[in-house]
Image (cartoon, rainbow, N blue to C red; front, side, top):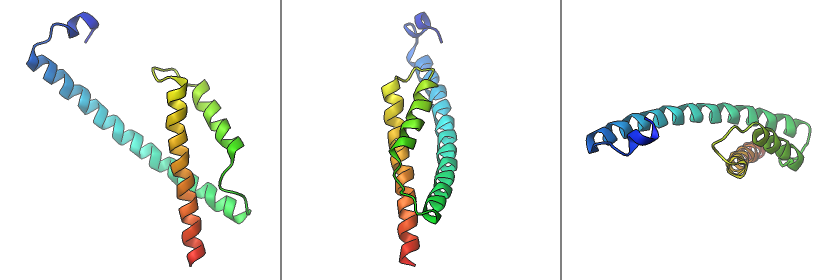
Amino acid sequence: MQGAERNHLTAEEAQAALDELRKQIDALDLQILELLNRRALVAAQIGDVKKAASLPVYEPKREEEVFRNVTSNNGGPLSESAVRRLFERIIDEMRLLQRERLRKEQER
């Protein structure tokens, strides 16, 4: 739907458009979830390697590389700062996953 058309929708047309767009969001959310879980599996493997090599979980230089990678490849409409904030949160959760796995292994 283009700009001018959006201004002249009936309530029923608006609801139908919203329903369709929300279906797209729901499908995209499931794809994002799948990708996040795939990323978490790789992060867990990284944690295992770090543990075997006695390396720290937190690597600020690597995190900056990730931020540079995603922000320099961002085509929008998200701003660079929005992308960075999203990936800061993703990385925080991946780091937490590594630490929890390490703690559980140490408790054994």
